[in-house]
Length: 163
Image (cartoon, rainbow, N blue to C red; front, side):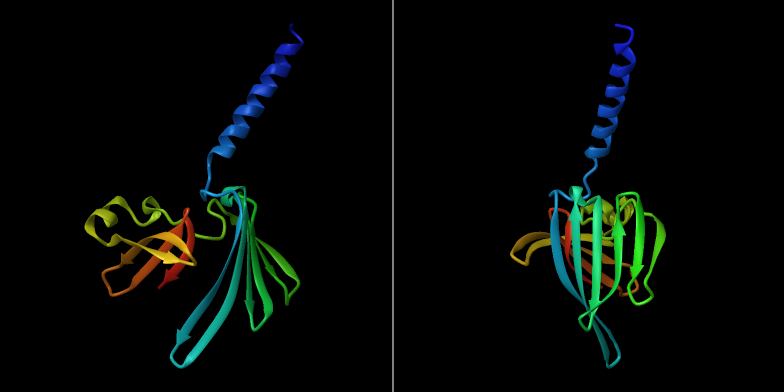
């Protein structure tokens, strides 16, 4: 019996640790691919990019590829602990630091601003809307200086952002 006790303790620690890690889910679905476009206008100049976000383990492992003019520009990777940046033209990779949230925003009422921002109306929940065939929650933030941003998400996954 004495020789089994340390093994039992190791198994208990492993199971409790694995369950604690598995308990956090950034997204409400296990894996997916989200493809979206980004358009930035500055005066008469407009820059368009295509982004593809691949995620697994409920959003804890993420890869975001960005393309411009059909050329893969940078990619960001997150393993749930660290964020990495790959620059293909320079053939370099960088450790960006810790990444508790991965590469993308979690769309959930409690992550937008503070409780004070939400109760004062700086952050508002708007009526749901359909994006890419999905019924999405919509939030709006107003910094009081005229800057308004709208976010829409399905299963806590960002599907629309207008800043």
